[in-house]
Amino acid sequence: MTMYRTSYEVAQVLERNREQLAGLCANSWQSRTLHALRKCRTAALGGHIDRCDNPGCHKLHLSYNSCRNRHCPKCQGHKREQWIRAREAELLNVTYFHMVFTLPSELNRMCLYDPKSIYGLLFGTAWQVIKGFSSNPKFLGADPGMVAILHSWGQNLSLHPHLHCIVPGGGTTRSGKWKFARNKGKPGCRKARYLFPVKAMSKVFRARFVASLRKEFPPHPTAFYENLFKHNWVIYCKRPFLGPEQVVEYLGRYTHKIAISNHRIKSLDNNNVTFTVKDYRHGGRKSLLRLTDAEFVRRFALHILPKGFVRIRHYGILSSSRKKALLPLLQQVLGGPVPNGRPPLKHRRCPYCQIGIMVTVAVFDSRGPPKAWSDRLKNSAPRRTPQKA
Image (cartoon, rainbow, N blue to C red; front, side):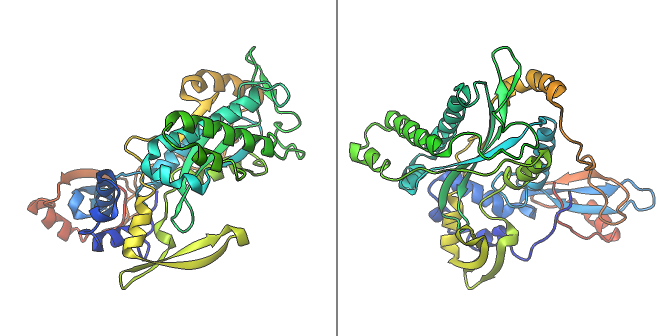
């Protein structure tokens, strides 16, 4: 996958504040993550030397290793593409619905205190709501599926935990047959709006989440939980995707997205960071936000997930334990994914001739390439380009 350099990077902010990173983080895991991002594709992580296999070229190319961290702005492209291709093969020829479950700001402090538990409850409760409404014969009366993706940020990098969910418009009955949602699940159905009643879902979501919260954190005073019922919890439901192509496009934007990408950063001056933000309350109008380095790093660190926490989860008929056997059968009945015409993932092309494939001939650590290879690189007139390790 081709990578494009940007004028400014998150890594630059981290590098010029490397001595203060630990003090801007809530724990050592966040600090370790930021230092990994700071070193990404630099000599500090070592690298490798590749040679073009085209007989007419044979040029050498120096690449520094990537950190491969899921929070890194420079390491998501290839992973995202691999994940999307895998999901494309699992698409059914049905209507898909998009729902967003959002936690109120009153729970932000608890998210900072114990993100693993709170985010885990968010995943579990969202699935309970979807499964509960789907199993009700009044709405569907079938076993559903769901892909859920956790985002914890808003446009200004503040804490804004929410779950993006993709739900097929139907499910499997006890006999194993597919059942479409009433006038909503068939592909191309123009009457389709929302899969289930939004207001009813919101009330159930709030009640179930607070009930689970009481069990998980019993010492909290009753007034705290009562305060959570003073405001409506909104489940945002978009109109259904028009087809499988839209589902894939959506997945491409959201699956491996991080708190802020490098292209949003517009300037780094006087220990300040200026980046673009969208105001979705006013039609997505763009503006610029200026933060000090310290505040930018502090906000960015808020969205570093706990070690080992899974932020993309599959449920029901789309879970890993069921989809291998079930989805091929459903695709025979409903139809499989629509061919997208995209070329398969390929090996990295030579940046010089654009014909040959780069083959690794040497690897090195942070001390740099051996002298013999350094001399060969000079003779080969290499140029460094931002390629993924």
